[in-house]
Amino acid sequence: MIPSTSRADQNNDTDAPTGGQQWRTAAQTTLTRLLTDQLERVNVSTGHRVLDLTGAADIAHVSRLVGASGHVTAVDASTGTDSPADPRGYDIVIAHRQPDHLDALAPVIALLRSGGWLILAGTIVAPPVVYTAVPGGTTIIDKVIRAINALTRSPAACPSTDATVRLLVALDMDQVCATTHTETSRGGGPGCVLYRHAARHLRDQLTGTVGFTNAELDRFDLLMQDPGVLLRVGSNVTLHARMAT
Image: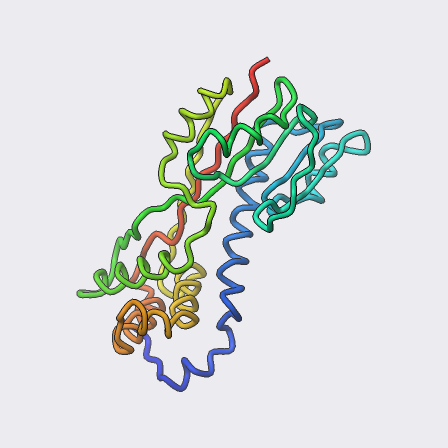
């Protein structure tokens, strides 16, 4: 059964994020975890020089792995800050998975030493998947989440993993591996709470620009608290590839 709530409760929700901060923080936390896994896969070790262009890697952890003889440089390229110019100077470069264009990937690959590793991470652009819901719930969940995704889409989002792999191969990278990470959540769980808060934060846009009624958004809010709801709350892809020697 869907738990009850009131408009007063919604308006006094002390857990609601400011400016979508909680939404972004959760996405950043997931990305950091995925990048840590990829770094383990490419065996980052003592003496390596690592460049992080995502602003999401666990720099303290990476610094411990490379030791005093290694070096870690972190630059969040999404802020518009120029990346360090050190062609062929890095053993590992971590970057956002940009749209599939040669001119986006080639400059990043040019920073790698021979035999170095490139790690890419990004969001998969995919429609929501609702596995279980009360009758009529699937339609409203699908519509609202699609609208939220359209309003909050990350610039690092990219629809085609295969296209990225083909470009990496075309740029003389080998040992290319793509890993997809998908999370599910029940109503009341962390992922559904984030969607609930996002819909609250974006309510003016969802009603004014997109055209939802307040009744529809109230219904969505209730569904995101219903433990009978199970849906996919996010999919990400990470890739690693080695510069040919």
